[in-house]
Amino acid sequence: MTGLTRSFFVDRRVVPVTPGPLRNLVTRAMAGFMRWEDRRYDVLPGGGQAAEPRTQCRGLRTLPPMTLLTDEVRRALTAGRLAHLTTINADGSPQMSAVWVGLEGDDIVVGHLASGHKVANIARDPRVALTIEAEGTNAVGMANYLIVHGTARLVPGGAPELLQRLAEVYIGPGVKFPPFPNPPPGQVIHITPRRLGGVGPWAA
Image (cartoon, rainbow, N blue to C red; front, top):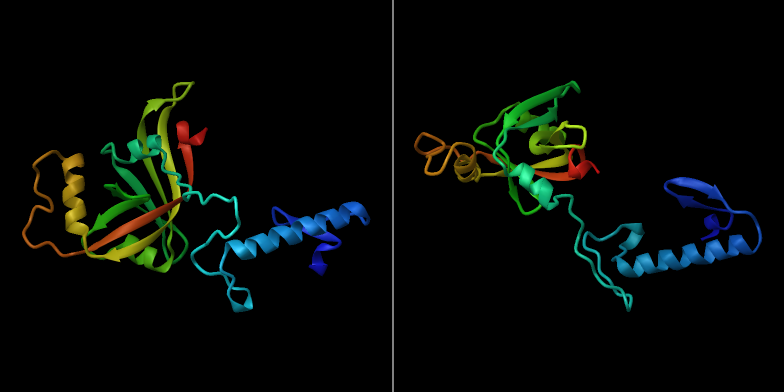
């Protein structure tokens, strides 16, 4: 803790602490917090941290993980409007596809039967952005739309089943999709939202 006797970190900035009682108070507080963090997480040898946190401090209540997918966001993503998925090409330029989207838990899912640019891009760089129009307008009459910034991962198989489920929303009940026998298993793109934007209650 010697590094905290003269300064400490706040929002990734080093803030100087003047000598005297204030410095001692800050040092003790930061030391206590770091000891609490070590108890709260399984700290591995060498300073690594286990993937799963655990709470050992009495009086602390374990809270469920936060999700960005509020009811309003979920409605926008499941209303049957085309979304635009942007991935990053190898040269850094954007690549965009119009896609059907659905939800699986807190992930946005997209089905893809074959390999393609977006699949290759996600395999190389998981950063993605997705936009979709939404119902309603804001106070000045602008149409609502949602922007999702997130990270994507590829899950082999399951694309025909997902596309069949989404076709019931995007095309209509009772439709058969893909419209040919024995479609390939494809891949399902899972997108974990990291940040939201756009116009609507999610941007408030």
